[in-house]
Image (cartoon, rainbow, N blue to C red; front, side):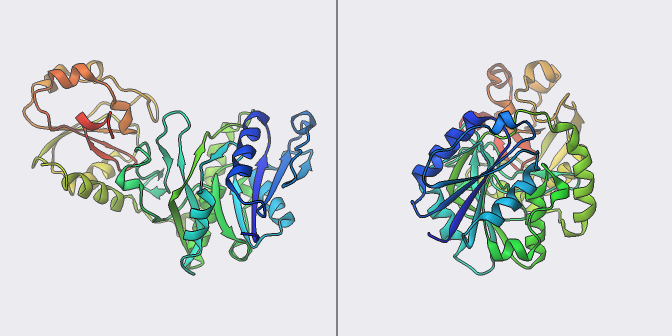
Length: 364
């Protein structure tokens, strides 16, 4: 693996960088190059030394943004294979071997990413990305890392660059990171251009890393909407709505293990704007009657208490219910609702294509 260079862009939050680098150095061979691109207009944030013989530091007293920091690291790197690694990513054993093996298994593969795990829940946070009519979605997000749906290498439309491999040749051929995107959507933009070049993007199921996300000690969120406007404008012709196939896969997995009903009440507790699209897609595999809406107050609510959110009359209905939510794990718990509910065949569906029995949400 002498031909691999790992590039770690860093802006702020040294404590997490230290943990990231410690996991990198113990999970990769000595011959793998590691480059840290320290960049911050506040020189105090990058006024420190990294004393490790394997780590080379590039220092810029400017806010380069993610894309420029990656591009600079690529220029300085010696390897033919490039790995981009966020400074709040923490690597599990054998991640590089699994990533490298899959990446080199076919000439059609242009880009490969790790399966990313939430450091708090120990569940999948990114296993590739797809598109609904209006937005990005993360197939099987919040599943356990050993769930069968997340344990196969998977070709995807887009992936997160928190831990991503690409060859130097492909990276340069598609034009590198788009610096106009600054700190948002630069990885999905890269994936879309890799696809356009006739190559494939994949997730390596056995290459796993914890990713905290949003760890820089500055608030960049006001810029997201502006950046997304440019990102969509430049990439609309490269995008394809593909989340339907993940819903079908999720349904087949559940149907192969559970006796399902032939009609369901649809109770929409989500925050999505394209709720009709989701209902129509799910309705192709799970017949729906009498849809009703109880819109969420915010995106990706962490917990939804059904006993206070829904009309008590739903407890008595003899038809099974589909609860459509942003994240299926928001319905964990709900012990009283489950105890009072007359039908035991209720299902939870979320915007990331998870389909699960309500009484199994805590387990799966």
